[in-house]
Length: 89
Image: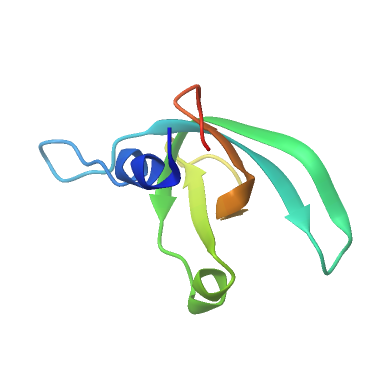
């Protein structure tokens, strides 16, 4: 799946206008803290609003669809590995 197709999947809504959950796998990375390399997988995630800082750095923000978890995860676009178990190129 290409990146633009992955965006379409992440932006899908149901009949009531709520975001449809999707699964995502991505590599975590933080250059400032020099951490990362771990693969993070969320089985039911939704895309949420990203700050201008994230958009400038070509990142999106995703969070767990069930509301559990501490915070949204910033994800760099090129570090997305899979959407709904399909590889992202």
